[in-house]
Length: 382
Ligand SMILES: [Zn+2]
Figure (cartoon, rainbow, N blue to C red):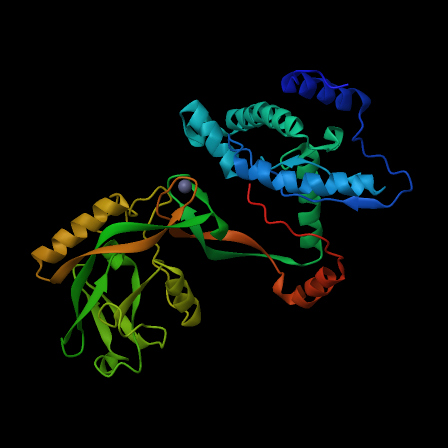
């Protein structure tokens, strides 16, 4: 019999305790057909939002339905606590950056903090009614996960599927870490489009390049013109003199240059964007890396060494103006790539990195993927 006045709080606690005490969601292989549910573990960054509850409610309905149909449900639940979001959470709580805390102490704080939050998360997901076996829940930073990933990596190295080389990587000079493309966010910011006069070494012919990043002038390795640009293609194969920096670089042709953007003549720097990287690789251009990992100009760059990137931008514009090299400056709103965790504009840094060869096995992966019997795909982005 239901009570006259249904007390949800009381009943919730009663049934949660019943489920726990009787371990009714325990996963025991018992000969019945297993129905597995794989979910992306929520990131431990301090908050659970409605999106988490929404997506796990859907998988929960499937788990319960299949359970009633007689399947043995394998529904492991995990927490993704090995990444930057968790590290940022610790930094926020401590009011200090990781490097100020020290590696060992920071690592300890990361474990303590994520454990604390995971306990809260577990309680919340339990209250929601997630029918997982909490005895087998996993963490992406637990000793067993670390062991599995290290063994798997060593296995790939042994089999010759890994190689190491210097290559540009996305770098956040706020978080002092390399970041993945998936961690980028596009932001619209106000800046200036600076039209700067260059000239050819041969005839001293002036031509203009428009850029939002004049601080990259010391990193120019080449100037590009579209071969179909009738106004500028006579510059191809000549040499450009970079104003103020007093360095000469070749002028080359590439069809990727947008004739209708800016002036149609562009500078290639190492590195301002993805196209710079493409050109650097394609034409085997030299490398002039001018930023330190904490967002300054390296000391070797005369006049600007030691300045923060934005300070250098300001000073270079001033110097260009004083030298009479600025044609005009336009106010501009444009999109920049920022790091989603801190909102700061990202840079490229050249680093020694490990690569795992996947492209040579593309066909195998596709074949295996097609062999898997995919039942349900739910979009989850916790
Ligand atoms: Zn960042």
